[in-house]
Length: 273
Image (tube, rainbow, N blue to C red):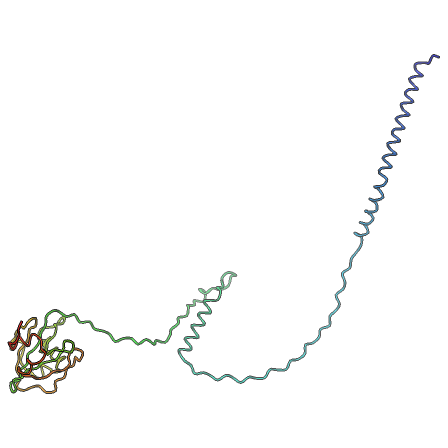
């Protein structure tokens, strides 16, 4: 049986179209079947979100508190006033010291940081603490510069033939009144000063001789003025008790038996080197 070529082609195209339509319908059905379980779940979530979002919460109202008046406390008893202590400069000074210590320990405050007034604007000065002076100032000490020269005096009483001697406290030896020449002092003034310090005798009140009228002799390192008086001067007493123990009128025979210095031995010719 012979078929027409056009008929065969048409049948073939029809079959192909039917197969494509079946495949499309199957794909659509599969897609619908696979998507159908998701839509209900998404719709449920959307509705729940809308319910939550649409809810309006109202804050609970604060109950009104009625103020209650506090009970009246009894007044405290009046304490007796403390007795007034007598004012004392030491206590006030200690109080001032404690106040200054507290100020120094407290943290510093910058008054000008916020535009306020500073200490310079008030022209204030730091307080000066003046404590009462309890220290006794020592008496001024006068240092006298002395030279190496020594001047003294040998006094003999004509009526008794005895001489004036002094006993040194440190060396415990008898000697003629003598001492070192001080600065801006003449030898004659040095002799008169040492005579007054070691015996208490005032030269001008007992002697009229001037320096040029007196004999002088040098014994060892000292130079002595030699003078005679009619009688022994009474009431001799050393003024410089730190160096002189006592003073006395003694004869040659009396003095050489005592502990004397070299000048006395040389003057009376009993020195033995």
